[in-house]
Amino acid sequence: MPLSSSLDLSDHPDTRHVLRFTADDVTQALDAARLTLAASPAEVCTLSISTVGRLVEGVLRVRRLDEAGAVRLADRLAERPGVQSSRVEHQWGRS
Image 1 (cartoon, rainbow, N blue to C red):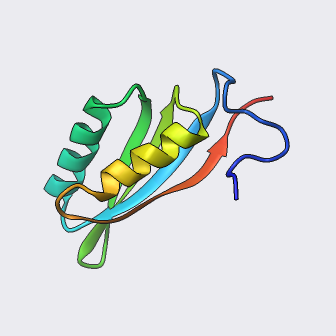
Image 2 (tube, rainbow, N blue to C red; image 1 turned 120 degrees about the vertical axis):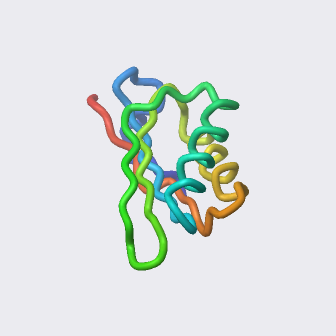
Image 3 (cartoon, rainbow, N blue to C red; image 1 turned 90 degrees about the vertical axis):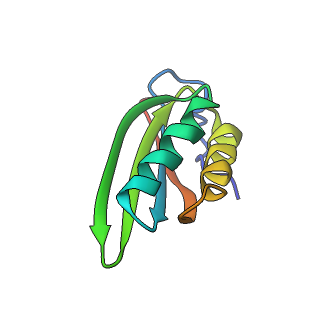
């Protein structure tokens, strides 16, 4: 099921994809985000990391990616050491 609604915002310059991921600790979360983004055309809007029990949760907002690129970015992030899960949560932007 595609993430976007019937209004396709993928090519709009203000479109953002929100990725959510969990990692074992802050260092691994930061390294995973840094290394994954280094190999991507994505432009970082924000990165926040919070402690959730014994894990940390990262929320990464990026732009300059279409829907398929955001899914690939989440998949690559999930492959990094210490990352437990990663997914594209949603897409938003101005029409």
